[in-house]
Length: 368
Image 1: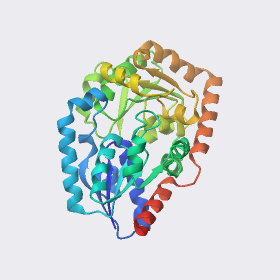
Image 2: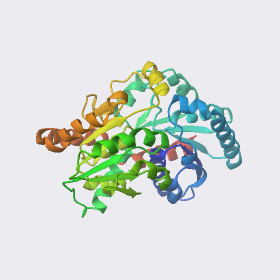
Image 3: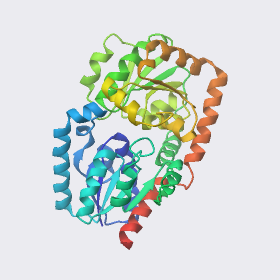
Image 4: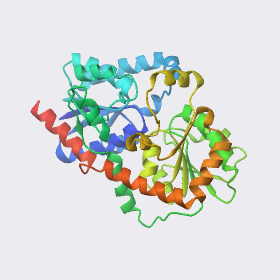
């Protein structure tokens, strides 16, 4: 069968790649094309578009890049028509993918959404769009099943794919041990994120001269982009394409909100969530987003497990205070690690999430 997968960011590329591996086990003749990144390509997809050309962050940035977004939308429609897939699999990337789902529905393609749009955070009205245009919804956060059930829409919860990915990595790299003096910096995968978060992280790192500061570079961002930020920080090491090895060793981490916060927690690394957006985007978000937390760890656990430093709170001084607490306070470190284990158990329900999702997709296409 033929599958067209659309993933518009690094996390979608990761989950898409593991989904592809499992689909190929179930469907030896699977032909897969779509949007994603290096991981999806390595897993066997033919890329029509790389996500590094799609990463627009925040309300203001999206508006500014509307012509490029519309051009991509037109290209995607034409590419799908040429490919004629048996189903279109949409991975997160919600605004673009929901718009695309409306069109693919009119063309009578089967629409499967893997990893739900965060309609529980904002734009709950999108639930009506999902009910109308999405034939099958597969969710990976435990509270999402009840959320949709309360709105008369049945979804399938498969567990979180990161649990299996990270546990597999730990087994394969069991010789890597946690160090006592490494602070990891994970400032995001998009240029706007890095530009906002990295300078503040680096400034705070000056207050920890006895620690090795290691920056995990985003695979979709070239080295030259980082150079101006690193000027004057000769003790900061930069690594590429090896974030998981870094998290195996790290004592603590400064992490931009997103999938990385969950990955860091699943590695058991005490972390501080750092997030700062453009002023216009932030002010709009304040009025639209209805969440107590921005970090996935806190959202899933429904309490503040890790400290969030957001917008004006994100200063070198505040980072220093919070970082000292997770580095030097034994009670805080022990509590964090205990809660990270509870998080892992919560997300492990159902077993291998990528396999579960692939099986649902494969069987749905066959039956339909």
